Length: 254
Image (cartoon, rainbow, N blue to C red; front, side, top):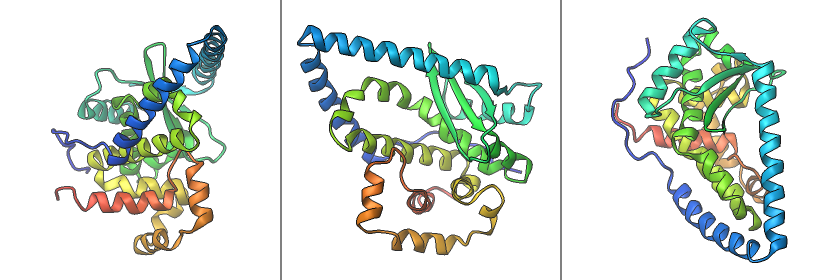
């Protein structure tokens, strides 16, 4: 039986997110001022917004027409778990949850369209709940709910001007992921490391991973090419996320 969810929420935002958020706001404001100083710049902005809106709408339409909607009658255990975590994290509305066949790919993501929130769980992740991995699934769901709680989807849309500066937009995105890892660990500590390891090693092999060795690997896997690959990515390297999350879990109350 899982540990009851915490009733109080400390500040779980990763320090790097605050730093990059401020930098992203400053760069975005400058970018928008320069862009809207000319009719040509305004036209470009309108075109970008229109293309982005239509593309996102088509994407959501594809999800709704091809994925399975979670409800009280469809995967009720996942529906109940999502509602429990939504209330604990402090979201006003339960997002629409869909399960999407992923071709073996383990992942999940949250998004928002026309004032409605969505959480999409890839089918391989959901299988964790049916193979004695409910806590790992709960961590993944809490992670995605945290994106909605912290308004990451909204801010990343408003701060797209920050991507003008090389690496800044990606750095802010990576910091947001670290924040959401903290949320996931705070609300489902038992499944936190397993949730990340499942993304790295798969829904079966993650149980065989040596935790101490993976933490040692995070210390060894450094250098120019690792750093260079990281700064281009919107997500931190999984191995290093495991190390950072393990350090954070040590600070949580027993």
